[in-house]
Image 1 (cartoon, rainbow, N blue to C red):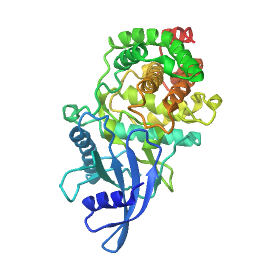
Image 2: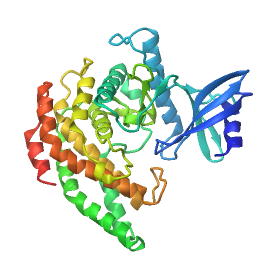
Image 3: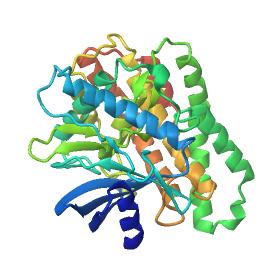
Image 4: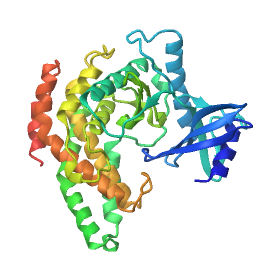
Length: 387
């Protein structure tokens, strides 16, 4: 880490400041993120500094979306419009750069931005207990409800084809066709070919499932887009969610996509990069606690096709398996890695989660019935024939 460089960039946001400490947040797999402790006017303070990935369509759209959401949250807090909860909820607001008055600073072919540091919070990489699953569900519901009256026409697309499952399948097929498998060693080749074959029947079914889902009337809403567990900040004292961070993927989409991706994240209690893949399974009890937390807040959408939750969980796990494997085949352009075959391993982890989830669907369906949500028995029987 280049202390001189970080200190220089920090001074572009906070003039005449000095960096005291730099902590790398290594849980993210897109941007490089740091917690910077600095001294300014004789006082110690902290802020978040990010080096943005080049995957985004436009840094202007990225920061416009971010500011749109955080201003909306702050306005509701200021006007006491968050009436359903007396606990704090904060926005990870951007900090304007002193040197150019913009929300980013270009330097050495990179783009840097700063955000406020939300005090007295922490995050989880892996779920610790069921109560946290409940609080995570409640936190996501709070975010959805706060953003439910935002004008969707103002939300831009920061990542092209984000959560477009058919696009990911097409890219996956192109990558397989173009890839030179001979360059892989024998072990990696066997692992890659095995996963490609295992995914083939799922991809056939996903095409059919997406076709049937396209015929349903599901409203679009403002969604986070990447509500994995470590994007939730929890209060140190009360252990409840006080902020949802990493707003780069905010877009117009289905609430069900957010629910499914969050469930995928918290219900894999081994994590996305476990030391032992044998520990990976889908914890259906965590899923139920999450859903109880989510539905503990009245949802303004009313009847919102929540019976499709199992289908969307299935789709998001297949989607992420394909994305990790495709990135491996494309020389790891998208997700950050620590070793060359990490995205292949991540894909294998997601596939193992998928296989276990399929066995848990009947239990999940019964639990949904208990909280007043019906489910599609045809989907349950069809998907179980694949594994």
